[in-house]
Length: 198
Image (cartoon, rainbow, N blue to C red; front, side, top):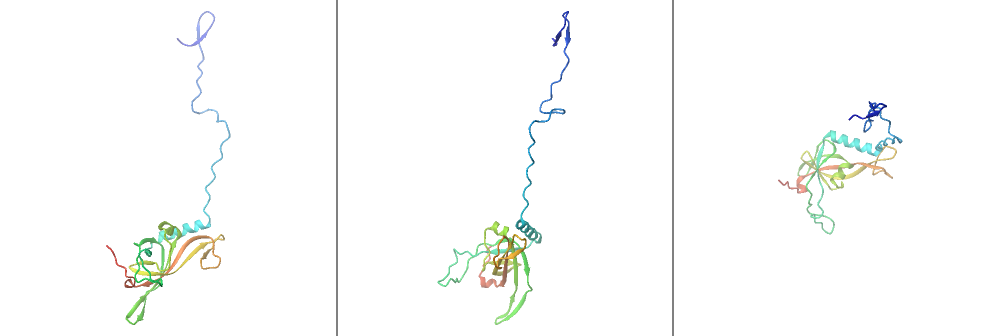
């Protein structure tokens, strides 16, 4: 039986249809009460040191240069009372992305014939050093284009608060470490006694 209102005389009159309000907030629903939460703050921009490190990493990735890096295995290298060792053991080489600056290959006359000489400068970003968990040191061996080089000196570039790179060899160098710079000299494979393993 239809719902309605009973009038005098017993007749039933249909009640006017009143639609129910939409559920879940539809068109024409009232705005939610309460204040609107503020938008999330933007993420902080990287500092000058972070920007410099990212720029160096992008340049190295674009250059596509790599070297094989040998670290000395001190546990298996036996030294005498003077700190010298007749033979050195090395860990397997790591493939390191870097920037390489090469000087021209030259030859020097020696008692036993001509001896090739060449120097290279390798720039390794701090992020790569942290990724492989090693510290560049004098005496390390690097391989570039099937030639072996010994690290003769190391330096580090810092990014100061003023925004200019400063060498670690400068007085009072401080700031964010960005890159390691290694100077290497060509050495003979026979002098290193490195045996290739297959």
